[in-house]
Image 1 (cartoon, helix red, strand yellow):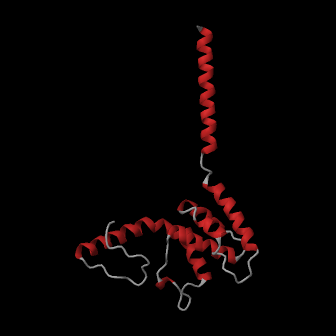
Image 2 (cartoon, one colour; image 1 turned 90 degrees about the vertical axis):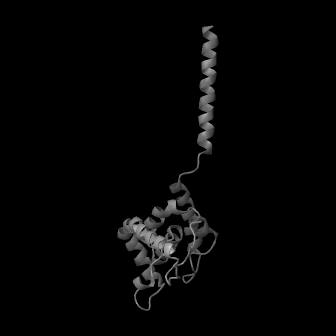
Image 3 (cartoon, helix red, strand yellow; image 1 turned 120 degrees about the vertical axis):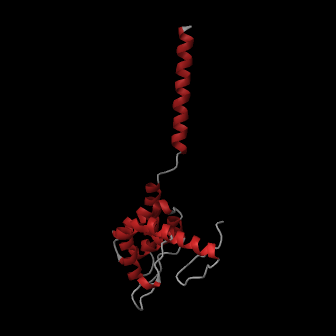
Length: 168
């Protein structure tokens, strides 16, 4: 009887460890590792691009951006520590896409709207200092939106990129 119990226990342990091994193999790769692979592929691709070429086109860049908002810290880190301005501007663009953060025209210097160097400065400053205000800004704007919706007074605003007229 003792041998049967020992054999069953050993069999159950083997099944448990085999199950854990299968789960470990199927576990998603951490976002940092995914970012590193895709970033290395993008760097390799971008190294072959002419000086004036856009680095935010191509499959390699799209695959980086496809990592989504959870990759924002990696984009910001690479933006702030980029080897050259071209890479920094491209990482600012990626950060813009995954966070959907936009800056109103009033924050841009006169005649510099959408200038890449200014854009880099705006996103760098926002990441270091301003993003902590995002929740407060959202709450304020959402309250204003609800107020306007209740009045039926929703109006297109020049610096808005997406306008939603309904909760859905």
